[in-house]
Amino acid sequence: MATTNDPSTILRDSDFPELTNDLILRAARGEHVERTPVWIMRQAGRYLPEFREARKRNDFFTICRSPELACEVTLQPIDRYAGLLDASIIFSDILVVPQAMGMEVQMLEKQGPHFPNPSKLRRPSPPQQEPNIHETLQYVMDAITLTRKSLNGRYPDASKELLACLSTLKAGAQMLQVFDSNAGELAPSDFSHFVLPGLLEIATRVKSELKALNLSAPIVVFARNAHYALEPLSDSDYDVIQVDFTLSPHVVHNAVKHKKVVQGNADPSLLYASAEKIESTVKDMLDGFGTSNGYIANLGHGMYPDHDPEHLKAYLTAIKEYSTAKNASTTAGGKKRKTASAQGSPVKSPTKAKK
Image 1 (cartoon, rainbow, N blue to C red):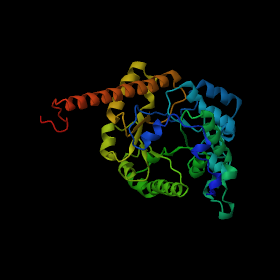
Image 2: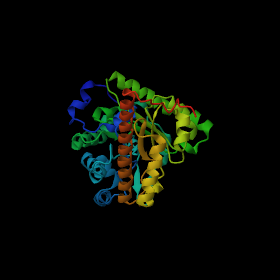
Image 3: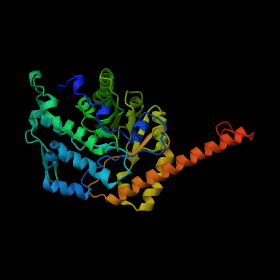
Image 4: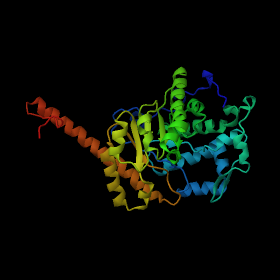
């Protein structure tokens, strides 16, 4: 897709209200955080009554193509869960890309996406017909810009539109995530041959282009169920690795070896459980992954349409309260140990203490 590197088209941080919550950006860079940041895949979606009301008035792609409607839907979970979410996710869909390439895509009720003429998918456009994303996907960029201004500095936002990632960053996005939701459908050898090189190239090329434009943004990768890809991805140019809910923190840490920030990973089905079960599972998850640095909380996959919004609130609240309390306790304990040491009391390092 055609893009432009004209510096005059780039929106800088100074063009937007000052950011007051950079928690998720600091976590993605591996910096210390006072609590665990969290966002949720599909946090703007059918489980929300306000989203279903918006869908009654507009079809799916109308919302995607309207910057105002996309902004409205993007902010719905931010407004509902005030103070509990640390990122807004631009409401868009990967299917806007084939639309921009001239393919007809329909979103059928209770069926999902449908291509009336799928044979077109096998006929690449001639080079002279390569679409210009500033013309065909400008509404995505406008939605990003409008949303970030509407947030008025409350939260950083991340765009899901991948093939136009450079342009989304120019429009004001501050974090990107590359999704490969079907990665685990391939055998390890096929994944390594057909998918992994492309995933690695995306991160490398985007980082290179961003550096040339004097821009920077953390990039997350999610190769769902491709557990065998954790080690090569931990040596890639991605900043954060999202993991699905089939992996324990122990397995993840053994594969990633703290080379990258980790994101995830509760089973979405947890949100059908009681508040007590949600809270206990959150504690186990945070104890396993850690709460002070190198971790961003999420689910191991997206929200389900029949999830109760109040159960998500319980999940978000548990993450915020437990990580805040745990980090505060750790900080207080560290100060006490330093004081005791300064006064001459013997303080042994737990890593060096003999059994």
